[in-house]
Length: 435
Image 1 (cartoon, rainbow, N blue to C red):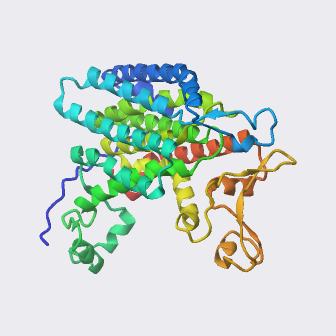
Image 2: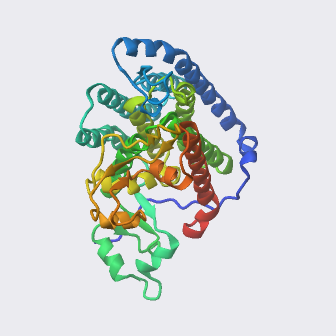
Image 3: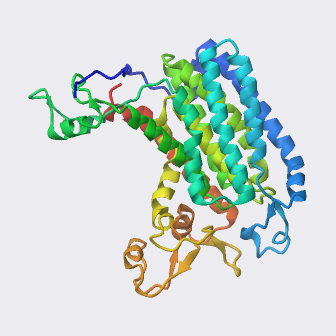
């Protein structure tokens, strides 16, 4: 295969600045533009906060409600119907905000208009899928296949690079500096993708494989929040935290280097209304929740993050903000792939005597699932195994907690891991990547 040099622009190293300097060091045009977008985000908060109580009455009339399983031993709350699928309100509020932003910032820019339209189509498709799931209870195969379709507008309008930078410690596996040739591993990889020999193995041009990677990322994001849920405030809370850190990341990039300002400004245009609308929902979904967000919000939030990462051209840093969700996915693999039984609801159970949440599980025979019991540090003759979720893992580590305290602990975990991801990106990235 002929070696062509992939289109990849190296970034110059930029000085690090403290987070408190971010807004003060934004150049005036960026500061003003960010202010306009923040105003649209504030509008989204007002819309969601105002409309949720009204729409909740309509969902109750349509018999779209549920009982809070975490409060079945609290007499005053166990029989109270909680309106379902209220994630539809911030989703519609978000779409309205983005349409306003499109009219305000892209009406004279055809290319930007197309980018906005692709984002709107993808998010709107997932909102429809989520609401259908809340109403019809779709099978899992539909939840995996339909997000793939929703990514097609993103892929059709994606104009960024399809190459990736190989981490410095791994380049020796692909390129031999002494002979100025590819290693056997590099030659094998070059049969599938293009290894840039002029960059000494530092760049891989993935082509269509990169588009497949973006599809996988969108499918993961739309389902990751949905399987990391089950207690009051967790879905909206984790999404709010991730959104805030994406917002901070974009502001940092704009303050450090305006080279790719249009990508980060577009990401801010999407994430500020998302944060505002999510905060309006969180006000009602926090413990004790008066509304349930439903699958509508989970799919809406996940696709919004995927759209922001893809059109903002920072899919790699986006993974650093999803560390708890990644851990929950990998930890859940035994149940997701039916290696062990997977109950319909894996949320923690409530201890009737104390009223605190404890790990939920499933029954098994003594001597069954020895391998998984060993991983969980359980005796081989145990007749019950805990469900494989980070929520249950947290309860095993921290002990029984109230629902509010459990959600707070998981929010602290989300904040700490997102902050660690931000530090890794700006302070440790230079040890693994150029610039």
